[in-house]
Amino acid sequence: MINFDFISHSVNETINFAMSLASKVGVGDIIVLNGDLGSGKTKFTEGFLKYFGLDSEVSSPTFTIVNQYNANNLNIYHFDVYRLSSSDEFYCIGGEEYFSSGLCIIEWGNLISDCLPKEYIEISFDKMNENENYRLITVNTFGNKYDKIFLE
Image (cartoon, rainbow, N blue to C red; front, side, top):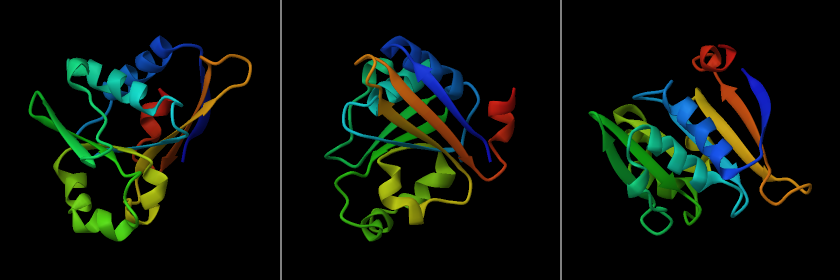
């Protein structure tokens, strides 16, 4: 398990961080994003998709629960599970089936933590008091699968 903090001083730094991570992951990988409204989860996702040339297609899946993007034969599933009332709803939409068929980004993933597999990356975003544009980004990996990504 890896745990580290990163301070982003701007939206561009958050986007660059996301692009760097996007270059190192693929099918079967799961990234869980947690944080208050406006803390940077969607900007991170924009940066992540920008790596694949999809940044102009980003929209929040708040009402649809999941948006699907395709980049070079890689399915990317962007979930927003904020509106689910329970983990059972995630199972009802077949959420766990997405885990093996593409790369998953799950906003508000802490709400369905019991549905998550043993190995995933969790990224939490917190606004910092010093400056409204600063974000404390905390990364935790679960399982050993992702250790090499963050130890390089």
